[in-house]
Image (cartoon, rainbow, N blue to C red; front, side, top):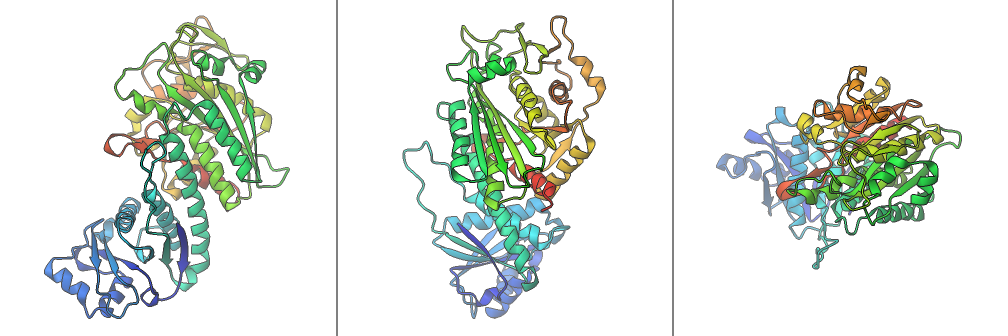
Amino acid sequence: MKYSAISQDPLQLKADCLIVGVYEKGSLTEAAKALDASTNGLLNKLIQQGDLDGKLASTTWLYDCGSAASARALIVGLGEPAKLNENNFRKAIQAATNALKNSQVKQAVSCLVQAEVPNRDTTWKTRFHVETSAASLYRYDATKSEKAKPLNLTELQLAVAPADQAQAEKAITVGSAIAKGVAVTRELGNLPGNICTPTYLAEQGQALASTYDKIATKVLDEKDMKELGMGALLAVSAGSDEPAKLVIMEYKGGDANQAPHVIVGKGITFDTGGISLKPGAEMDEMKYDMCGAASVIGTLTALAEMNAPINVVGIITSAENMPSGKATKPGDIVTTMSGQTVEILNTDAEGRLVLCDALTYAERFNPASVVDIATLTGACVIALGHHATGLMANDEELAQKLLQAGIEAHDRAWQLPLWEDYQSSLESNFADLPNIGGRPAGTITAACFLSRFTKKYKWAHLDIAGTAWVSGKEKGASGRPVPLLTQYLLNQAGQ
């Protein structure tokens, strides 16, 4: 799909389709007013007759564009003007994109950026339009015998004012890069566990290095990890025939002496719970337990696509958590790379075990910041639902930067406390700490566990258990939090 910004009069552009917005109760956007004038008041007639109501995400095809150069028009409902926030703006764009992808339209001009979204300028609306349209056009067919037919739609032009042209073009570059990163993340998340293994994830990291000159990838196998003393990570893979992998991808877009930002992704390619076996219902969704790792690959893809001027290290810590005669048992004690010992009380709390060794490994990069991303706790879903990513940090400035990036990208997080009070839940009679802290505040005590391995740098933890995928009829990976992570890193690069 090709996206571009145009500043000419959209009604004078010859296109297969002109997209304009109409508010509820008959209020027209500027582009809709122009289209109404070109059709001798047809839009107002349809409104008066009740055939065009402007309800949010409604769509109406118009095949008489009067003096306008387009072959047809798509009228998109924007709802009540006072309620057109980011979510409703997304719904309007999704409705328009869904109508287009089921049509014969090959090239369209969208005027939806003209809609007023509070506290959002044309640059933001342009980028958001691209990200939302691209997400709506995503189709998964990798494991289907019948592949999706190519879309008719190949080009979408976004109409902006002449004064906004240059910034809109930059926004399209950023939005397109993020959209590609999100698509990569979704594709990896949607693959089944018998394809997307730790080895497969390592291969995707190596493929990044082959695709982008600024990325170099190194893969550590179980022998390497054993030599490093990564007893916690290896304890998780012990019951599986699939070997664990630690994948290190270095994106060098900044100055050579610039300290890198490190992002660490949990990559459990399938999580049965191990000996602490999960219930059977919806266990198929545990293929999504590697979405933290997928988001690292997606974020690095986005950065490389836009040639971002920053140094970033992406670390994927990947294993398959399976029960077998070789599997780690509740009560077993392992020694982590940091030297701390862990009593494994529940083998289904495996994410923190693979992460803790990777977080210790991150020290060698002398990082400016470290952010880990993990589908870590069901407790986070109970606390925040599926709207906000859970955020905890050992540095308040870092936490605020991530929260702000989430607001800017509209991929929001919510901060939970990481007070010293909660650390008392992690006490063991037999090791330095256990891998669980009990049912109360499960998301926080999981982060407390990770904090024991992050004392040498600024660190934040993103629990994406509620945001990494969608269940039910629309089941699939969401691609979050690639927009948040990319925005955070762009902000650190001063972009």
